[in-house]
Image (cartoon, rainbow, N blue to C red; front, top):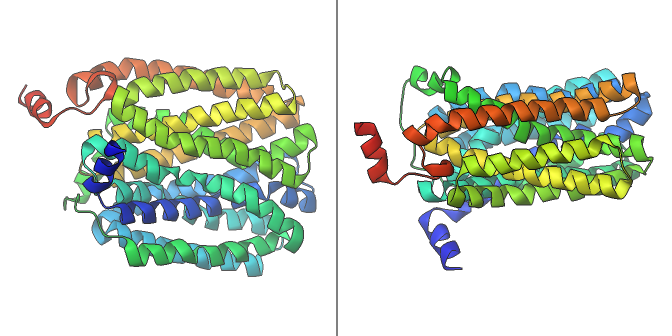
Length: 411
């Protein structure tokens, strides 16, 4: 309790809460087509390959928009960037409510839903910007727990679609986006941790080796999270022939687990180090993916997905404990770049699973391929982290004290 009070006093909780809501509702909008996948698939008689494409379009579109928004936010302010983005999301959802009628319209709407996916770097940097470095992991974990928006979408979208039609869900979502928009306008304050640098300085992380190591890590942790979250409703319906609402409820169980452990991942990373936490995370994810290959019962499959999501969520929190330590001034830009590549990775798993099912009759090949990729990234992490612990981070990935940072800089 004392540590919690110290944490709260060290920053600006209203801004952290506003950032959480902003990310949570944006995330829910971002995965909306995935949550409604069984309804859209039924209406347009889609193949599993088409379903994989449909749910990955918002992910890919959001990925491409993340980095530019992160850069812009450094010049106009993160609060202002968040307000502009949420206003654009409302307009996009109204377009979906009035004009989406065909499968091609759904794909086009997926691009517009990508606007919501751009919120990542701004939300985390805004939420953690008021907190000192020893609490960055926890603050980013709390803001990043907004990926619980996947659970919000999976819980409510199928029920609303059943009673009102899936096109009307866009209209309901537009109305709900007004809540985080108002909270952001009224309660959030722009953090002081900003330094006016040139565009070239902001973009340095694009060609730094460390940045690309983080990108690969996040392709697994976040790419796996968002990829599974968008594909699970369709997976449960196709694999186990449950109802659309039941598929949404099962998806909620898995995604909520991952959202909760994001906070724990940041908390553990602050204490035992982000590198150590990520290493454990990868081993659990790999084991979980291999467990899914056998295509067991619905209960076992759901539990395995919950295990995978728990590890992936913790991995997301651990990754962004390390990011502000590596890029303390340009966290939003670096986070935007890493989030962009990670989100692009979110398009890999739905397409792997969709194509695997369509061409082999089983999802096993898709799970095997992703597990193999995770093994390669884990090996890379263990190799490059040896240099990290000699330069900008402590043992296991813990934050260095100011004295140690100055000593390393002097060497």
